Length: 132
Image (tube, rainbow, N blue to C red; front, side, top):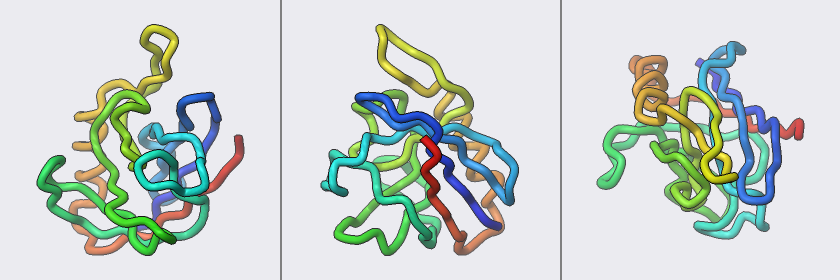
């Protein structure tokens, strides 16, 4: 299985994206803006990565992005706004706003959907593209 994250909108406090599985858009993402790949305050650079399943003490079963330059522990996980990302990739089912802040909605359901799509995989290729 191949995952592609297409970053579609850059806002002052977040980058919104669409997560595709084998070329079909299935979920939405929210990341921090790019800030020189700084730990906990930046999204990761666009590019090609490998991902593997992990059992996070905080988020439970999820997927980790591997071989990110100068970064570790980049996860796909639940959350709703840029304040929840900590430099990781939030997953949800649709975009929203709350008090003028970009959000993603139904994050837990989005994570459950992602885990179902990847349930038989042991490693997945991820490409992150910028179109915004």
